[in-house]
Length: 427
DNA sequence: TCTGGGGTCCTAGGACCC
DNA sequence: TCTGGGGTCCTAGGACCC
Image (tube, rainbow, N blue to C red; front, side, top):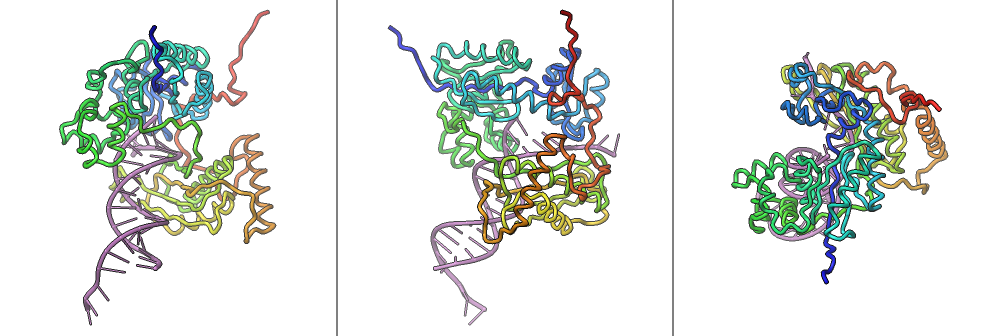
């Protein structure tokens, strides 16, 4: 009688060309056609269909540099529509939870699932079922990699992406070295540009070579993260699945401007607006911030106008999530770093030292504090109901000439009634 | 003018991820 | 002319203390 094997099995489910797939859902004409989705401000290419990849369009490439290829090949271009992608992402994740409620949502288009409770021999069948269900229920195609560790499941997923079946499992594979040998070292999770350079210098070009490099050498010549990656490649799990979502520690809101900003007044409006977004976000998660950093900079790519970049951090006397106080403090910080005569390209605010908001009154609490809390609550409720920035502060401006570019916006919003498709039914 | 050593904590900057 | 945004973690170095 053979016993059933239950070893550790981590699956990584990754949505294929996620933003492109989202746009295609609502625009079937662009299936099988080359499609790209641009980052904020129509700056860079952040999602490509396979057809676009085949044309040689690179991930992260500036849009204007790829424009020639795009026009020549009739590539469909979309500005990013994050409320659409966010909504579809939630649907995908909800679907995945049917297979195991303990999933780790790793990014907008990726999740780790522990499949250890399934017998080894069934795991590929389960993966097929996951893929088919997600496709059927959400319309989003996925790829799945399964292995003993997170890093290996990433590698397996990388291989799965290129396969018709969309699934690669290392479970039960005696020797994975021949597979790892075909994976470039810079495609390994945790190995970026700098580490790649370093590994190349030391004769390491693929995942197999890193896996088989001596432990002592790796420990000596890189940091803990480097040796963790190597261990994980050997099948020794060092990175656990995070089943409970940990509270975030910081919150950034920053944007590149649609056109360069030179006026102090406009910069103030932008920064005030980012503060409102950031404080609303942390309030919605019941967090307060210990400090705020404001940063501004000119374009790092156009040095002929002179480069200037600076930031200023100010601590709040008491951790806060009050929009008014946050804006006020940010404007003080901005004043201390603003310099006349520069063409600013980007500004942002960072709330840090986030921690759980408590209802405790402290030594300095006043009646006014209570009133502010009520005011913030009603602003948030109103904006939730009637759309963001229905209620704002005068300091955030109205004109907003500097708003981001969005020339190829699809105007689809699954959470907006006006965008619902109409179906004519005959009974 | 000479002027220790060791610990902790904080911060800025870098590397990495998607 | 046009080059994204939002996170986490690690490390080196400085400040501070005894």
